[in-house]
Image 1 (spheres, helix red, strand yellow):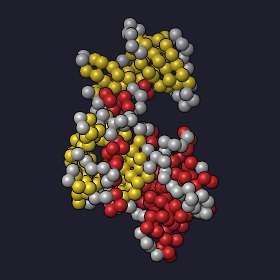
Image 2: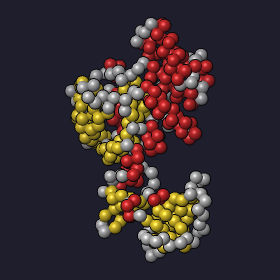
Image 3: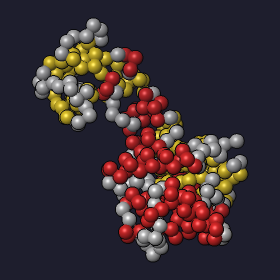
Image 4: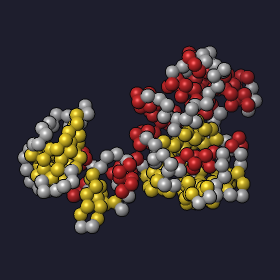
Length: 326
């Protein structure tokens, strides 16, 4: 039996459809991200899963029991779910230990069990030494760990995260992506993660749901989404790509799939000119224009492969790397 099932759920506000005909099944212990641009319906979907709002249509089931439908909603406090918000929502007047243990106190666990579970989770998130500090004395990454520890310590059936890393700087965001995945691998809690950052989704997720204008574009493992996008939207949203039209069909071609050299290749060679370039440390990002064409292509190469602006080069394009998109 699937752990969490969304069946054709929708949310309308008068004539506006925030979410339309959304269906998804999560297995126990699976980590699934809802990924898409602002306004695509991902947070609305998460709030319906949490029980903060009823769906206009469809149902949500947990362990085979309906918890949301247009007819009624099981309230959030009875869903056996934990949610982490963008703002962390940790209490400034409580210590780290008190914040983490708040849910256990509400559940009236024994003092011995309370202390054991709080200390255990603080060890896991590497905050045991900061147990008596207050949130104002913590860095952004440490505050995020407090929020994660507080959500996990109550042993929820489902963990919900709403853009939890958006307030962190770039280096901390990268660190916390791996921390969230590490904690998931340790506790195996069924998780739904909302983000507009594809890197976060790619690092943390077993599967990614790409959303656009309230609808599901594609659901797949990260490497499948990148390698075999089913639509132009997914191809353009997940990573960088070139769109090439041939014989009335549209194809996606990733920049790193194009060979770039001074010498004409044995097959599939196209002569081009370097029209722009950017050195990004780990690779060069070239803009090239095939001779006789008006539209340029992006090509990525190793940092040691250097071409000058205006230089003539040869492109090698393997047709097998071109993916047709609708």
